[in-house]
Length: 452
Image (cartoon, rainbow, N blue to C red; front, side, top):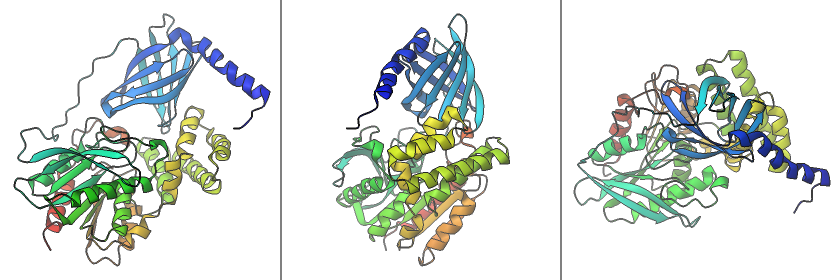
């Protein structure tokens, strides 16, 4: 246990009382709707002691940790992850708060009120509706590496099999088995399309989501998630209705990094599909990601370049300093240029997951993969640059006899037809997966899952 100086202890004891005096007059639940092209409801839960949390029901995100301060009539709510903040002015009658949501260098107006606001559910025409011409089975299995039970849905074509199967691997952050985002369910859409074509599909809740146990989810890394996938592969191979020689992986975003990690250790993997996977290490991916998102969100090139430089410098700090406690003040000092998001961004960059992601080099595992590979990116992907990552993936796969790499025009990170590719557009687009992307993945998978 660390012993703190008496003055520090005193300050820590006084802090809750000071925060309580500030926030207590407006403690409770506040409701607002953020307009990011589509209406995105947010719920702020403010406690008298200055602790807070935020819910985004459309994103299935609840309990996002935050802190609240009130100075006069000026409210600031700072989120830990994502790195974002809300700055508002409390009305004299304390029935409303008018302000702005601050994230990724941009600001959007957001008014909070005490009463919930009615919101019309967005249209998602591609979401499959029953009845389905195939079977769906809820399944569970245990990852022997962690001891955690994972839960998912296995869809099976008509008949007894044995069937080829694709295991779907989600992107970063806690995702349910459908990879639900803004009411989009891309994994459900993909599973439906594949199963109708004769390929079974297993889609799984991430650790701590849905029916899957969390374990130490706060410290779980890309390498840990790879063991979850390996456990799913083992489970599938043990089923009589699945052909153990035709088990393949389809990974989106971080899932496109995890899939090669698993296949590099398991030469029996039958095929890989990498949807917006990376081909360069995370310390190269992330600064460019911040730059491109800033530009697509309307920021200047100067602002985008400055943010990318800050992320590069922050990455250098965590790579040079393995002690998270020692790295924390260095990161806060570096990122203080945007004080509203500095704490949240520091928490993300200093996390165990982020530190590991920086050092994972996809090229190493890709070079060891001998299974057929399809790698696709959207030309307007601002999270994983197609211009940088597709050539890197292609180069890493040079020794593989059956590889296809494609950049699909006008598509974003979710493979939606997009205007700018900014994440703010994701919710506004009714399309869950562009037909061109869906056909590319399904046709290639069906062709490469036939008996050899």
